[in-house]
Image 1 (cartoon, rainbow, N blue to C red):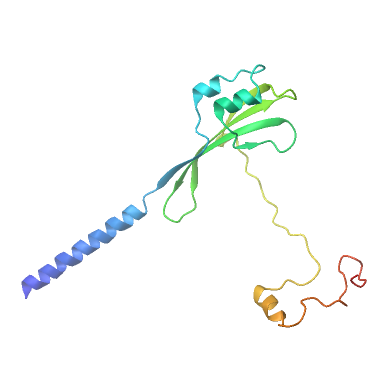
Image 2: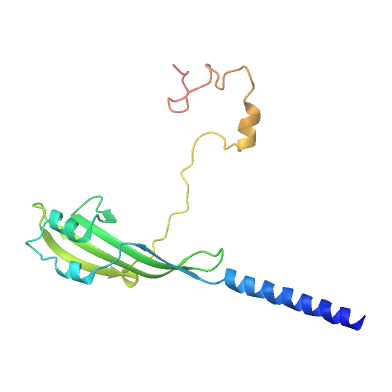
Length: 166
């Protein structure tokens, strides 16, 4: 009887150790590299005033993003992230290579940015009010009756000052 109790304790201890090791392995951080991988030799070969968009693209490849408005610029973005289990990823390092061009597509400047150069943006949380009621999905589902149209022709047009719908 005593040997059987010892054997059960041994099995329970092994199962507990296996579960603990599994938990530790599952919670190991995952480090991932995303985006453009910097190549100092190719970046150093870009000459201001002589290189064009074509030569930059042949050396560095396609840009991660380009300027939407304002000056013409290309951005090569890379980031290193760490994620532990199901938690939100943490950005460990971010590098941005910005290549600026003039109107003749010649390079006017090359700058390097990092995570320290970023700015925290405060998003506006207010919402623009809209006329009408807010309904849930279930309310919309129950409102639709089979065999009838979803809108009534005689209802008023909210964007036309209360007049009938044409």
